[in-house]
Image 1 (tube, rainbow, N blue to C red):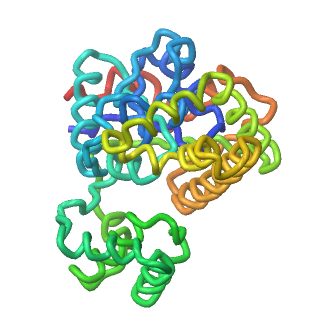
Image 2: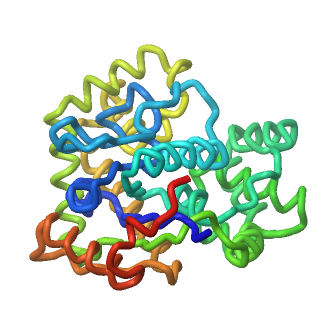
Length: 321
């Protein structure tokens, strides 16, 4: 039996993925499955730029606010839950549309990645403890560079959790993350995916990011961060979200709010750069020029591409699992 067809909308933050996913779902009779590593957490609606009810446009969205912020969550756990959502959508005779900017989560669903390697908690804790020492983050990043220069180039020195995990993987397996990824790419996935990404001129994308940050502030970003600061132990993932540490520092009087907004914009732009690097490495991605287009026109182009690849009547021919 043929594998189910899975449209995917990827790309950098603030590129308009959600609006396109909603319009594509209207064309295909679909439902959105979010692939965002922050939007899965409850209580972080503004920090994670979670789509509002208005932005969802009456289209069912899954994998949003489904994890307690105190829970340790992994790409493996995401894959298992997202696959259940996809199976349920298909069983209803609808089309699942995977949408998000977390490349690891998209790969987790569309490629049978080897997440079975369990963490050595003692080793991981030792690496994280090293990062807490004076100059420890730099030493930890140097340890990674010694065994996996490619991962060191990709991961920021302050991304302590992922730096530690990359070192841990090498110590446990003798292989770099890139080698694991190469082996994963050679495997066959569970779906016939077709991946789209929205391509903007860099200066226009940065302007959209600045506008997004301004919108988040108008929606109550400062109040959300203040509430999270009141009980940080219940929201350990919040400190990883762009905007949290910047706004929190301003609320503690360590910088002005204007400076916090500046650094939030800058961090978001750096995130977009990393996302673009991730998706440009993926030769499956179909890049669509977004400037001058509407979400509806982009969705129609996606629909046409899906039909061109899989033929007319592809939804009727797609298996219901």
